[in-house]
Length: 166
Picture (cartoon, one colour):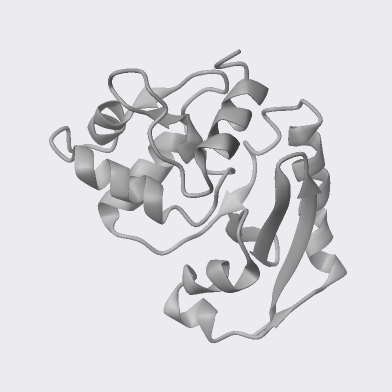
């Protein structure tokens, strides 16, 4: 089995850590490689990880996004472990147009379980591929930003960058 690739990309809001399997993004976040590895599937956690230039294919897309092409992530293939509901919630998040936000209640409805508002929040919290799977576009029903695993400052920056807030 080929090793996974890890790389770190500098962004205006800090280093974005990435783990890829060929051209599939398995994890992304603003914390650390070790935190991301814990979010991988059991099988992927046992695989060797290298810092490899083959993973650099994604760097251009990350740079494009932060340089203003806010649709740059739309074509990225992703894979992460999670329940059927979480998988539906993550697919629904990717369908939120850039420049728009929805509530946790709306996310639960779009994921097929309108009463599962807490589960929608949990899916956001377990998202291992932020900001590519845009959990930052999920806000509270009262219009307040709500939580974000990497801090409210990063969430508000991303939403400003995407034109949601001024």
